[in-house]
Image (tube, rainbow, N blue to C red):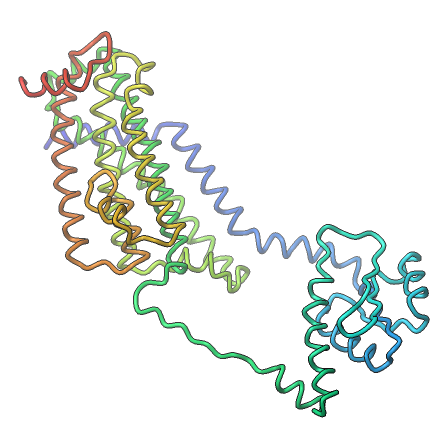
Length: 414
């Protein structure tokens, strides 16, 4: 235990002194701060830009029709549908409307043939111009109103029929996938990035010690299990410290700018994660990180040179990427109860992401969660012990990276 604590403290000190570790953490915190302050910054600059232009009249939209009653009805309907425009009647007909557009007095014009037919005039047609789309919707209501009035209804009766609102209620008896989607995806992506980053760091550190022959001295004076667990747990703690700094600052900056974000459901859902899901997040995050970090550390001990690291860890990286893709595809398709992801919920290499996704986005019986966590804990301890044995054997293997069969044979004999 004394050896383990010394190794853990030593490795943590190295992480805390690492300039890249500190720089990446500060960069992420600053990036999160900028992101959270975007609404306030946007409001500040837009208000400054708006000050000189106060009092500028709204753009003019003209409505023209031979039927005066139709023109008045369309003009009043458009006034409500186009709040950014000053909707006026063009008294001089279509030619007068076109002349005003060309001269810049008006921006656009609707020349009505009937309530269901019109010509839209605009000087330069923007690719983002949606006026016709809005007008089509409004004119459908105008046409229905005029048809009802023509059949003997009063305008009030027609308006009452057309303004009926359909009331609906949705009650989810299980989980609301959309509500939980965003923080589920963020957790999965964070686990993906941390495992690839810190797993590679663990493997690189082990390979560096081996290539410098420092490991041979360490292995004779320290228990290999204590060394492996100390290195891996130190990287896990460093990763949690970094994530706490990043997500903690995100929560802080969100609380400062909460009013500016208003009713943004996506942002609110990310920061309103329920406590039980947060506990499951920590459990699966830590266990998932440890199981892969042990594998990276064991493989790193078999590499004689730093140049061999990327090739050696490639199978583990591919395994993790496949697990990540299976979970993300299940999330985006909305089918988080397929046979594939259920099977992945019990495989130690995929369960940290698969089971957490199922817990967040579907209803999972408690005993399935318990079995998955139990398998994951047992696998983590077992892989940790096996990795320590591989670590002990790997320090003595130099030259060409050994094949897995040769490593297991050496471990068995040891």
